[in-house]
Amino acid sequence: MDPVTVGYLSLIAIAIAIYAGLHVAIALAGISLFSVWAITGKLKLATSFVALAATDSIAEYTFGVVPLFVLMGLAVSESGLGRDTFAIIARGLQRWRAGLSVATVLSNAVFAAITGVSIASAAVFSKVAVPEMVRAGTSRSIAVGVVAGSSVLGMLIPPSLLLILFAILTDSSVGDLFIGGIGPGLLLAFAYIAYLSILGFLRPDLFNMSREFESSDHVPTRAMLPILGLAATVLSGIYLGFFTPTEAGAVGAAAALIIGVAMRRIGRREGWQIAVQTGHITAAVSFLIIGASIYSRMLAFSGLPAAITQAAIDTGIGPTAFLLVFAAILIVLGTVLDSSSIMLVTVPLAFPITQEMGIDIVHFGLITVLAVEVGLLTPPLGLSVFVVHATLRDTGITLGEVFRGAIPFALIMAASLIALIFYPQIATGLLGR
Amino acid sequence: MNHLPSVAGPTRLGKAAVALMGVANVVATLWILGLMVLIVADILGRELFAHPIAGVPEMVKYSIVGIVFLQISHTHRAGQMIRSDGILGMVRKARPRLAAAMDLIAQLCGAGFAAMLCWAVWPKAVRAYMRGELEGISGHFTLPVWPFLGLIVLGSALLSASFLMSAAAAVQQIRKTS
Image 1 (spheres, each protein chain N blue to C red):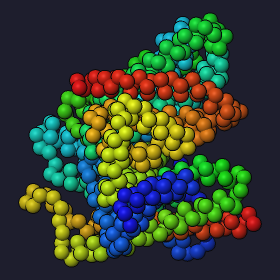
Image 2: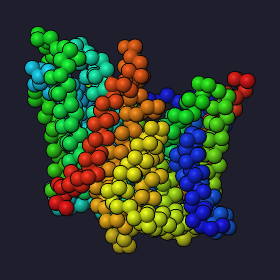
Image 3: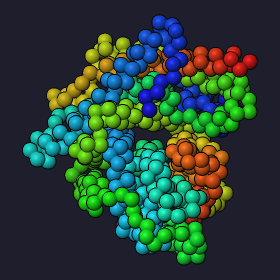
Image 4: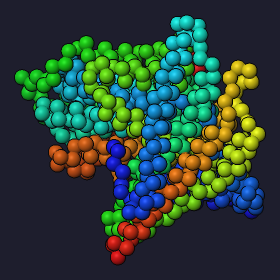
């Protein structure tokens, strides 16, 4: 059969299989196996093609970052550093109307600098920040919206698991992408804060902060030191060249565990659970990467990316228009599929086009991550919203309420995404490109 | 977090497989912690004493393969292998039998793929063992390749078993709802 036709058919088959609930890695790898078989007509060749990809695609030094950064993020969540950060920032902003909501955004931004998983942020802050905001008289819909909305900062502000995944898919520099994530992450955080402040000014009834309200926690300000020290160690170590991003993960994980143990928040049982959980996430993500690498090798073999690139160039579409279309597709996919699957399927196809059009890889990477993350907030399936809802189920809040609360934040994300598409400097500025 | 569905069933074989997955999980978990200690020791040795540990990059490279394949069956048993089960969840509310059937198909596909992987890598592992294939820089640091290929064979065999157990559970589900 014509290789390019097989390529198109395999795309359709993969889409159907993933939507039908097949495990993503199995769908990618299995259908790629059949595609190679269809192209070459030799089953033996197809199986050894898959076996080769499975054995050599994750045997890379850079893959060490996956378990180590996950371990660091989980250790940090378990040691309660997120709760401390929120308590301290909230105390500082008490006099500001909407201060607690702004504190949620800010502490999420700080927390994001040491963990790379949005779900971790959503779980921590729905437990910590929502009750506090509601007690202070903030409308419940805003309280849950803020938590769900600012949890996406975890994947933008480095370190970020999705950026690592993107770097692996496109064989680009993790360090560059991390630096590129700072600008968009800060932009989004400031946009949220501006929105909340304006809302506090226009609709003070939504925040209804009583004057005598006092923060319930009495966390000393120096409790901020571990979290700031951790972020500073990891990021400065990478940028000053003391260690590589992989090694930074090991340093950060070790430091986070030591802090947790020293503060008596991680005992033997918690430590072991963190390690097992790390293993599960690592295995799940790495198996996805194996599937994706089999798929992208099959694609290259079929010649489909080249054909699509040619077709895209022939339409005369410009880089900006292309990025807008690409982002729109990702947002639509994001309403149902999870972030990593979308990236694994679309990036190998779009990456050659962006190269041909001369789009900066860091710019492209951040657009991809931001667009995919909008899906965490949109119905019918927004992962962050689900996590917030699951954590707060006992309070009787409905899923619809959380989704409605998250709408303004999803819109702000979309606006930031458009700004990022038109102004690549937001991402690439810090790299001096 | 450590909740394992009791699909092992009453069979002795199922229990043995689950126990083996548990052991593999413990080994892989310890391996991750060991990896962390190894890298930190390497950095400290290099920056403070100008004395790096030989072969850390090679060890990290192959450790990931070992960790992933040892851990993957336990991950699948814990229901943490990534799939987009959103549509499945919606179908389950309206037509539970259809959803169970869809799940059965997904689990069988997984079992088939994992078995194929096991079967395809096995000859490579045997060949690497026979020829004594090595990885690394000769004279500096080398390590044999076959144990890692062996772990891939073991891990995919266990994964296939785990998929089959879930498939059996899906069949039970279909029977129960009919």
